[in-house]
Image (cartoon, rainbow, N blue to C red):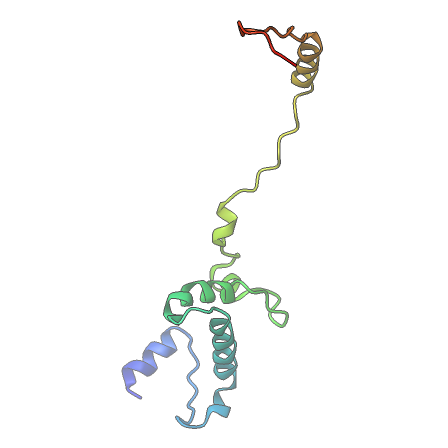
Length: 126
């Protein structure tokens, strides 16, 4: 690796580890992540898996990890990120106003049936 890359890693406190290119067992953590990512993408029935990728990644970044006691997004940002569903506030149904119901009952009780009338000039034969 170049000296520039080494000094950049040292500046940002990054520990570099060398692995074999064709030996996936050495990259266990990333291989596990790829397996989880692939399983999540396969849950979507779309043939165009690229279109499902943003939603899948958002979901995976907000999953609580037991071993870390936080989500990956919480590790990066210091707090959980908002999911799109949290922007749609579920409002509780409003309780009916008792005064309105009382007035409606009173009004309906005061209604009286209107007598029917025959507007036809011809008599009905039975």
